[in-house]
Length: 149
Ligand code: HEC
Image 1 (cartoon, rainbow, N blue to C red):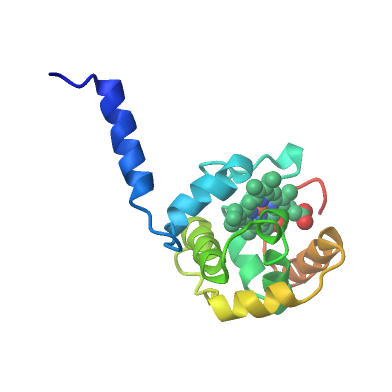
Image 2 (spheres, rainbow, N blue to C red):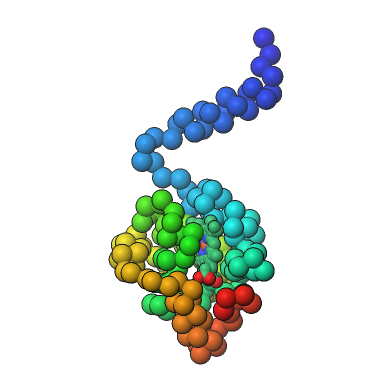
């Protein structure tokens, strides 16, 4: 008997999901697709008019300072994501690698740093971003054109 292609696709898809063991981590690229791409886009360009800033050309500047790193750990999509510290360091490092400059030499996040920074209270993330942007401008870094600079 021939299995119709659509049924085969369903069987394969179920097999993939079923083979994930409890507690097994998804790769950073998959987490980006599932948790981030809906807002930030496949190409990392975001929707600047809709209040989602683009990554290419700018992301390195945010990783370069203490305040920027604290900010990143409190952006909406990360603060609310039910991801482990290891998954968060993985997906943010993935974003930085994929859309940062190849020679930027930014320091990757470790799960421990994620844990420490997430535990620090940040009352107003938009206000914190403004402070980070001031630092970035002073350091001569480019800043995305974005409605809440
Ligand atoms: C519901 C939409 C949404 C989702 C989902 C989302 N983000 Fe965001 N992200 C935003 C918004 C809005 C900002 C800007 C926040 C601000 O202005 O303070 C932002 C900012 C950022 C920034 C800083 C860039 C900048 O210019 O300020 C990074 C890095 C980032 N997000 C990464 C991620 C990652 C990684 C994920 C997935 C784990 C994710 N985001 C999921 C909406 C989202």
